[in-house]
Length: 310
Ligand SMILES: Cc1cc2nc3c(=O)[nH]c(=O)nc-3n(C[C@H](O)[C@H](O)[C@H](O)COP(=O)(O)O)c2cc1C
View (cartoon, helix red, strand yellow):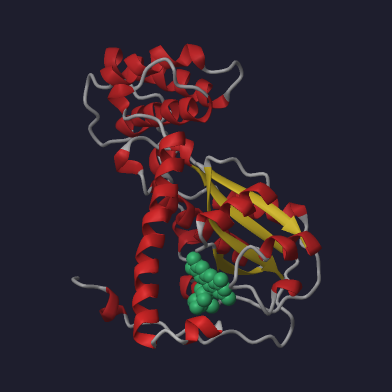
Protein backbone atom coordinates (compact mmCIF):
# COMPACT_ATOMS: atom_id res chain seq x y z
CA UNK A 1 0.00 0.00 0.00
CA UNK A 2 1.32 3.48 -0.82
CA UNK A 3 2.08 5.88 2.04
CA UNK A 4 -0.71 8.13 0.82
CA UNK A 5 -3.29 5.28 0.87
CA UNK A 6 -2.21 4.25 4.36
CA UNK A 7 -3.21 7.70 5.62
CA UNK A 8 -6.83 6.98 4.65
CA UNK A 9 -8.76 5.21 7.44
CA UNK A 10 -9.41 1.48 6.78
CA UNK A 11 -13.20 1.97 6.98
CA UNK A 12 -13.09 4.50 4.12
CA UNK A 13 -10.73 2.30 2.08
CA UNK A 14 -13.18 -0.64 2.45
CA UNK A 15 -16.14 1.56 1.43
CA UNK A 16 -14.23 2.77 -1.64
CA UNK A 17 -13.42 -0.85 -2.63
CA UNK A 18 -17.08 -1.74 -2.23
CA UNK A 19 -18.06 1.06 -4.65
CA UNK A 20 -15.32 -0.05 -7.05
CA UNK A 21 -16.63 -3.68 -7.02
CA UNK A 22 -20.05 -2.42 -8.02
CA UNK A 23 -18.69 -0.16 -10.76
CA UNK A 24 -16.64 -3.13 -12.08
CA UNK A 25 -19.83 -5.21 -12.37
CA UNK A 26 -21.50 -2.50 -14.49
CA UNK A 27 -18.44 -2.25 -16.76
CA UNK A 28 -18.19 -6.04 -17.23
CA UNK A 29 -21.90 -6.42 -17.99
CA UNK A 30 -21.58 -3.59 -20.51
CA UNK A 31 -18.71 -5.47 -22.21
CA UNK A 32 -20.74 -8.72 -22.25
CA UNK A 33 -23.73 -6.85 -23.66
CA UNK A 34 -21.67 -5.32 -26.44
CA UNK A 35 -20.27 -8.70 -27.47
CA UNK A 36 -23.65 -10.39 -27.35
CA UNK A 37 -25.40 -7.65 -29.35
CA UNK A 38 -22.63 -7.67 -31.95
CA UNK A 39 -22.92 -11.41 -32.55
CA UNK A 40 -26.38 -12.73 -31.74
CA UNK A 41 -29.15 -13.16 -34.27
CA UNK A 42 -32.68 -11.84 -33.80
CA UNK A 43 -35.59 -13.93 -32.50
CA UNK A 44 -37.24 -16.39 -34.92
CA UNK A 45 -39.97 -14.07 -36.13
CA UNK A 46 -37.56 -11.26 -36.93
CA UNK A 47 -35.32 -13.44 -39.09
CA UNK A 48 -34.85 -12.26 -42.66
CA UNK A 49 -32.57 -13.01 -45.60
CA UNK A 50 -29.70 -10.91 -44.23
CA UNK A 51 -28.59 -13.74 -41.93
CA UNK A 52 -25.12 -15.05 -42.84
CA UNK A 53 -22.28 -17.26 -41.61
CA UNK A 54 -22.59 -18.80 -38.15
CA UNK A 55 -25.90 -17.02 -37.50
CA UNK A 56 -27.34 -18.59 -40.64
CA UNK A 57 -26.02 -22.01 -39.65
CA UNK A 58 -27.45 -21.68 -36.12
CA UNK A 59 -30.88 -20.61 -37.32
CA UNK A 60 -31.09 -23.36 -39.94
CA UNK A 61 -29.92 -25.92 -37.38
CA UNK A 62 -32.45 -24.69 -34.82
CA UNK A 63 -35.24 -25.00 -37.38
CA UNK A 64 -34.37 -28.39 -38.86
CA UNK A 65 -33.94 -29.70 -35.33
CA UNK A 66 -37.52 -28.65 -34.59
CA UNK A 67 -38.60 -31.06 -37.32
CA UNK A 68 -36.47 -33.91 -35.91
CA UNK A 69 -37.84 -33.22 -32.43
CA UNK A 70 -41.42 -32.98 -33.64
CA UNK A 71 -41.15 -36.35 -35.38
CA UNK A 72 -39.60 -37.95 -32.28
CA UNK A 73 -42.72 -37.30 -30.18
CA UNK A 74 -44.99 -40.21 -29.35
CA UNK A 75 -47.84 -38.60 -31.24
CA UNK A 76 -46.50 -35.96 -33.65
CA UNK A 77 -49.00 -33.31 -34.72
CA UNK A 78 -50.20 -33.61 -38.29
CA UNK A 79 -49.65 -31.33 -40.04
CA UNK A 80 -47.01 -29.29 -38.23
CA UNK A 81 -44.03 -27.06 -38.97
CA UNK A 82 -45.51 -24.45 -41.31
CA UNK A 83 -43.47 -21.58 -39.86
CA UNK A 84 -40.28 -23.64 -39.72
CA UNK A 85 -40.67 -24.83 -43.30
CA UNK A 86 -41.30 -21.30 -44.56
CA UNK A 87 -38.21 -19.99 -42.79
CA UNK A 88 -35.98 -22.85 -43.92
CA UNK A 89 -37.08 -22.37 -47.51
CA UNK A 90 -36.32 -18.65 -47.21
CA UNK A 91 -32.85 -19.21 -45.68
CA UNK A 92 -31.52 -22.33 -47.42
CA UNK A 93 -30.65 -20.55 -50.70
CA UNK A 94 -28.14 -18.48 -48.70
CA UNK A 95 -26.27 -21.48 -47.25
CA UNK A 96 -22.93 -21.93 -48.95
CA UNK A 97 -22.76 -24.99 -51.23
CA UNK A 98 -21.67 -28.26 -49.63
CA UNK A 99 -22.52 -27.26 -46.04
CA UNK A 100 -23.56 -30.31 -44.00
CA UNK A 101 -26.11 -28.41 -41.95
CA UNK A 102 -27.90 -27.40 -45.14
CA UNK A 103 -28.05 -31.06 -46.22
CA UNK A 104 -29.50 -31.99 -42.82
CA UNK A 105 -32.07 -29.23 -43.22
CA UNK A 106 -33.07 -30.42 -46.71
CA UNK A 107 -33.54 -34.02 -45.58
CA UNK A 108 -35.53 -32.84 -42.54
CA UNK A 109 -37.75 -30.75 -44.83
CA UNK A 110 -38.46 -33.80 -47.03
CA UNK A 111 -39.27 -35.80 -43.89
CA UNK A 112 -41.65 -33.04 -42.77
CA UNK A 113 -43.43 -33.08 -46.13
CA UNK A 114 -43.62 -36.89 -46.00
CA UNK A 115 -45.15 -36.80 -42.53
CA UNK A 116 -47.56 -33.97 -43.28
CA UNK A 117 -48.80 -35.52 -46.52
CA UNK A 118 -48.55 -39.29 -45.88
CA UNK A 119 -48.26 -39.70 -42.11
CA UNK A 120 -45.01 -41.71 -42.28
CA UNK A 121 -41.90 -40.92 -40.25
CA UNK A 122 -38.54 -40.98 -42.04
CA UNK A 123 -36.34 -43.46 -40.17
CA UNK A 124 -33.12 -41.50 -40.79
CA UNK A 125 -34.49 -38.22 -39.40
CA UNK A 126 -35.98 -39.53 -36.14
CA UNK A 127 -34.70 -43.11 -35.80
CA UNK A 128 -36.02 -45.53 -33.20
CA UNK A 129 -33.68 -45.77 -30.24
CA UNK A 130 -32.59 -49.13 -28.83
CA UNK A 131 -31.45 -48.43 -25.24
CA UNK A 132 -28.11 -50.03 -24.36
CA UNK A 133 -28.77 -50.98 -20.74
CA UNK A 134 -25.49 -52.88 -20.29
CA UNK A 135 -23.19 -49.95 -21.03
CA UNK A 136 -25.30 -47.60 -18.92
CA UNK A 137 -24.97 -49.79 -15.84
CA UNK A 138 -21.19 -50.22 -16.00
CA UNK A 139 -20.26 -49.30 -12.41
CA UNK A 140 -21.32 -45.63 -12.36
CA UNK A 141 -20.07 -45.09 -8.78
CA UNK A 142 -16.58 -46.32 -9.65
CA UNK A 143 -16.42 -44.13 -12.71
CA UNK A 144 -17.74 -40.93 -11.12
CA UNK A 145 -15.92 -41.27 -7.79
CA UNK A 146 -12.53 -41.98 -9.33
CA UNK A 147 -12.27 -38.59 -11.05
CA UNK A 148 -10.44 -35.88 -9.14
CA UNK A 149 -8.85 -32.64 -10.25
CA UNK A 150 -5.14 -33.23 -10.79
CA UNK A 151 -2.57 -30.49 -10.27
CA UNK A 152 0.63 -32.53 -10.55
CA UNK A 153 1.35 -34.01 -13.98
CA UNK A 154 4.15 -36.08 -15.56
CA UNK A 155 5.81 -34.43 -18.58
CA UNK A 156 4.45 -37.20 -20.89
CA UNK A 157 3.00 -35.51 -23.96
CA UNK A 158 -0.64 -36.18 -24.82
CA UNK A 159 -1.27 -37.63 -28.26
CA UNK A 160 -3.50 -35.89 -30.73
CA UNK A 161 -5.43 -39.16 -31.21
CA UNK A 162 -6.54 -39.17 -27.57
CA UNK A 163 -7.55 -35.51 -27.72
CA UNK A 164 -9.55 -36.12 -30.88
CA UNK A 165 -11.28 -39.04 -29.16
CA UNK A 166 -12.02 -36.97 -26.07
CA UNK A 167 -13.53 -34.14 -28.11
CA UNK A 168 -15.53 -36.57 -30.19
CA UNK A 169 -16.98 -38.07 -26.97
CA UNK A 170 -17.65 -34.62 -25.52
CA UNK A 171 -19.57 -33.84 -28.72
CA UNK A 172 -22.20 -36.30 -27.43
CA UNK A 173 -23.24 -33.48 -25.06
CA UNK A 174 -26.70 -32.04 -25.40
CA UNK A 175 -26.95 -28.46 -26.68
CA UNK A 176 -29.79 -26.06 -27.26
CA UNK A 177 -31.54 -27.15 -30.49
CA UNK A 178 -28.37 -29.13 -31.20
CA UNK A 179 -26.55 -25.95 -32.21
CA UNK A 180 -23.20 -27.22 -30.87
CA UNK A 181 -21.65 -23.80 -30.48
CA UNK A 182 -18.48 -25.16 -28.83
CA UNK A 183 -14.87 -24.51 -29.81
CA UNK A 184 -11.72 -26.02 -28.28
CA UNK A 185 -8.23 -24.55 -28.63
CA UNK A 186 -5.42 -26.91 -27.55
CA UNK A 187 -1.92 -25.80 -26.54
CA UNK A 188 1.03 -27.96 -25.52
CA UNK A 189 4.28 -27.66 -23.55
CA UNK A 190 5.71 -24.17 -23.19
CA UNK A 191 2.78 -22.70 -25.16
CA UNK A 192 0.39 -24.27 -22.63
CA UNK A 193 2.34 -22.65 -19.79
CA UNK A 194 2.19 -19.30 -21.56
CA UNK A 195 -1.56 -19.52 -22.19
CA UNK A 196 -2.17 -20.69 -18.61
CA UNK A 197 -0.65 -17.44 -17.39
CA UNK A 198 -3.90 -15.74 -18.51
CA UNK A 199 -5.64 -17.32 -15.51
CA UNK A 200 -4.67 -17.27 -11.85
CA UNK A 201 -5.78 -20.64 -10.53
CA UNK A 202 -2.93 -22.63 -12.08
CA UNK A 203 -0.12 -20.78 -10.31
CA UNK A 204 2.07 -23.37 -8.63
CA UNK A 205 1.49 -26.17 -11.16
CA UNK A 206 1.27 -24.36 -14.49
CA UNK A 207 4.74 -25.55 -15.57
CA UNK A 208 3.81 -29.24 -15.12
CA UNK A 209 0.78 -29.12 -17.43
CA UNK A 210 1.54 -30.87 -20.75
CA UNK A 211 -1.64 -29.76 -22.56
CA UNK A 212 -4.44 -27.31 -22.02
CA UNK A 213 -7.78 -26.94 -23.70
CA UNK A 214 -9.35 -23.50 -23.87
CA UNK A 215 -13.08 -24.05 -24.22
CA UNK A 216 -14.99 -21.23 -25.89
CA UNK A 217 -18.53 -20.83 -27.18
CA UNK A 218 -19.53 -18.98 -30.35
CA UNK A 219 -22.22 -16.46 -29.40
CA UNK A 220 -23.36 -16.25 -33.02
CA UNK A 221 -25.34 -19.41 -32.27
CA UNK A 222 -27.78 -17.58 -30.03
CA UNK A 223 -30.81 -15.41 -30.56
CA UNK A 224 -32.38 -12.47 -28.83
CA UNK A 225 -32.61 -11.43 -25.21
CA UNK A 226 -33.78 -14.77 -23.85
CA UNK A 227 -30.61 -16.62 -24.89
CA UNK A 228 -28.22 -14.02 -23.49
CA UNK A 229 -26.80 -16.47 -20.92
CA UNK A 230 -26.94 -19.60 -23.08
CA UNK A 231 -23.24 -19.53 -23.97
CA UNK A 232 -22.25 -20.10 -20.35
CA UNK A 233 -24.67 -22.99 -19.97
CA UNK A 234 -23.59 -24.70 -23.18
CA UNK A 235 -19.92 -24.15 -22.41
CA UNK A 236 -20.26 -25.58 -18.90
CA UNK A 237 -22.04 -28.68 -20.15
CA UNK A 238 -19.45 -29.31 -22.86
CA UNK A 239 -16.50 -28.72 -20.54
CA UNK A 240 -17.86 -31.24 -18.06
CA UNK A 241 -18.34 -33.80 -20.81
CA UNK A 242 -14.81 -33.19 -22.01
CA UNK A 243 -13.48 -33.85 -18.52
CA UNK A 244 -15.53 -37.06 -18.20
CA UNK A 245 -14.33 -38.15 -21.62
CA UNK A 246 -10.69 -37.55 -20.64
CA UNK A 247 -11.32 -39.55 -17.46
CA UNK A 248 -12.82 -42.42 -19.46
CA UNK A 249 -9.75 -42.41 -21.71
CA UNK A 250 -7.36 -42.65 -18.75
CA UNK A 251 -6.23 -39.02 -18.80
CA UNK A 252 -6.27 -36.65 -15.84
CA UNK A 253 -7.42 -33.06 -15.85
CA UNK A 254 -8.24 -29.96 -13.88
CA UNK A 255 -10.84 -27.38 -14.84
CA UNK A 256 -9.45 -23.87 -14.56
CA UNK A 257 -11.63 -20.82 -14.15
CA UNK A 258 -11.61 -17.95 -16.60
CA UNK A 259 -13.29 -15.61 -14.13
CA UNK A 260 -11.26 -12.68 -15.38
CA UNK A 261 -12.06 -9.12 -16.45
CA UNK A 262 -12.97 -8.65 -20.11
CA UNK A 263 -9.65 -6.94 -20.71
CA UNK A 264 -7.79 -10.12 -19.78
CA UNK A 265 -10.19 -12.39 -21.66
CA UNK A 266 -9.67 -10.14 -24.72
CA UNK A 267 -5.90 -10.49 -24.38
CA UNK A 268 -6.31 -14.28 -24.24
CA UNK A 269 -8.65 -14.21 -27.25
CA UNK A 270 -5.95 -12.38 -29.20
CA UNK A 271 -3.24 -14.80 -28.05
CA UNK A 272 -5.21 -17.89 -29.11
CA UNK A 273 -6.65 -16.34 -32.29
CA UNK A 274 -10.23 -16.73 -31.08
CA UNK A 275 -12.82 -14.55 -32.75
CA UNK A 276 -14.56 -11.69 -30.96
CA UNK A 277 -17.73 -13.79 -31.12
CA UNK A 278 -16.28 -16.47 -28.84
CA UNK A 279 -16.73 -16.22 -25.08
CA UNK A 280 -14.05 -17.98 -23.09
CA UNK A 281 -15.71 -20.47 -20.75
CA UNK A 282 -12.75 -22.09 -19.01
CA UNK A 283 -9.42 -23.83 -19.50
CA UNK A 284 -8.87 -27.52 -18.80
CA UNK A 285 -5.39 -28.74 -17.84
CA UNK A 286 -4.79 -32.20 -19.33
CA UNK A 287 -2.10 -34.79 -18.67
CA UNK A 288 -1.17 -37.94 -16.78
CA UNK A 289 -1.05 -37.62 -12.99
CA UNK A 290 2.42 -38.11 -11.48
CA UNK A 291 2.64 -41.30 -9.46
CA UNK A 292 2.19 -40.54 -5.77
CA UNK A 293 0.51 -37.18 -6.45
CA UNK A 294 -1.94 -35.75 -3.96
CA UNK A 295 -5.40 -34.36 -4.57
CA UNK A 296 -7.43 -31.79 -2.69
CA UNK A 297 -9.95 -33.46 -0.37
CA UNK A 298 -12.87 -31.42 -1.80
CA UNK A 299 -15.57 -32.91 0.44
CA UNK A 300 -19.08 -33.15 -0.97
CA UNK A 301 -22.40 -32.08 0.49
CA UNK A 302 -25.03 -34.62 1.48
CA UNK A 303 -27.69 -35.38 -1.07
CA UNK A 304 -30.28 -34.00 1.37
CA UNK A 305 -28.44 -30.71 1.40
CA UNK A 306 -28.84 -30.34 -2.34
CA UNK A 307 -32.27 -31.82 -3.04
CA UNK A 308 -34.90 -29.35 -1.94
CA UNK A 309 -37.73 -31.74 -2.59
CA UNK A 310 -38.01 -35.38 -3.64
C1 LIG B 1 -15.41 -23.83 -13.43
C2 LIG B 1 -14.33 -24.37 -12.55
C3 LIG B 1 -13.18 -23.65 -12.38
C4 LIG B 1 -12.14 -24.15 -11.61
N1 LIG B 1 -10.99 -23.44 -11.50
C5 LIG B 1 -9.93 -23.95 -10.84
C6 LIG B 1 -8.70 -23.25 -10.81
O1 LIG B 1 -8.58 -22.16 -11.37
N2 LIG B 1 -7.65 -23.82 -10.19
C7 LIG B 1 -7.75 -25.05 -9.57
O2 LIG B 1 -6.75 -25.51 -9.03
N3 LIG B 1 -8.91 -25.74 -9.58
C8 LIG B 1 -10.01 -25.24 -10.21
N4 LIG B 1 -11.19 -25.94 -10.26
C9 LIG B 1 -11.26 -27.28 -9.65
C10 LIG B 1 -12.08 -27.31 -8.37
O3 LIG B 1 -11.33 -26.79 -7.31
C11 LIG B 1 -12.49 -28.76 -8.12
O4 LIG B 1 -13.23 -29.23 -9.21
C12 LIG B 1 -13.33 -28.94 -6.85
O5 LIG B 1 -12.61 -28.65 -5.70
C13 LIG B 1 -13.83 -30.38 -6.73
O6 LIG B 1 -12.76 -31.29 -6.67
P1 LIG B 1 -12.57 -32.47 -7.73
O7 LIG B 1 -12.58 -31.86 -9.11
O8 LIG B 1 -11.23 -33.07 -7.40
O9 LIG B 1 -13.69 -33.42 -7.54
C14 LIG B 1 -12.26 -25.42 -10.99
C15 LIG B 1 -13.44 -26.13 -11.14
C16 LIG B 1 -14.47 -25.62 -11.91
C17 LIG B 1 -15.73 -26.43 -12.10
